[in-house]
Image (tube, rainbow, N blue to C red):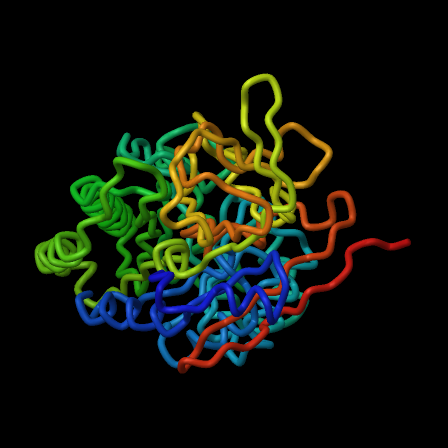
Length: 409
């Protein structure tokens, strides 16, 4: 997000702090550029788990070719935003019987099956409802590129069916009443910034699907390539080379899209890459103090609103999110620790941050917080009010989710 495109100080006066702002004008322009570079046989899906705000979802209605969801609640969010269940793909390692039934009753496009037992449960529910459910089998590949910082595949994990065990699952799906096997789903990892690694993963995914199809005399209608496109959060990181990735995908599909994959549609599910860079979290400095040689800057919001900035959301080593002092331009820089107002030492939003000297009343912005921030935060912790989420669309600002008190007293 280009912060100078928005008067964040005016928004802070109007809506009070803390707040989130999502620039959907910029996000949709980015989406259109990416969609225009992808091969025609690739469908671009938005991952609801990245940001499930209803106004954000509705903004993608005329753009995304479908949605990836991870719960029945996200199906409800999708429907409330105007999406048809017929464009929804549902994945996740622990779908309850209630969720499976709700998905089947809704008539979603694809149910990504993560285990043989889940397949059997889905089949029993489909039979009871007198429905036929379209599925993909999620395959956990034997290997995953090391450049993916968080891996779901290539390791022992709860995700998918191990590649070396997939054949019995395919046979089970093909002979089970109420089940229609449409293809395969392979998701190896997330937030990768290396174009060569992303392409190596795509090639491996297509090759695995082709091998399974050949062994079982299948012509898959769908192969879900997963996603994993990353955005740079930390100093020294370079953005993913998007043209290299999209060009390389076109070359790979031209090579592999023949024989049993000649008529296959390929799904690309992205969340962080589509919305992450187009959100900002803004909080105000309420206190500054020096304790034992360290300068602490205390904000009116913290990990309860923007948990990933604390480094406790999958980071192996704490690194600072991109942070800007919106009020301190021109001041000398110094090392300071940015903290939230919570009674826990993990409410540290940035450590040893070299930035303009913060003072009471300053506005502090955390960039690249459009994905996995509001929704991944412990909003009820200690009973602070939740921050409003503001959406900029068509140059206009709208509160898409209002501030509300979390205290139950």
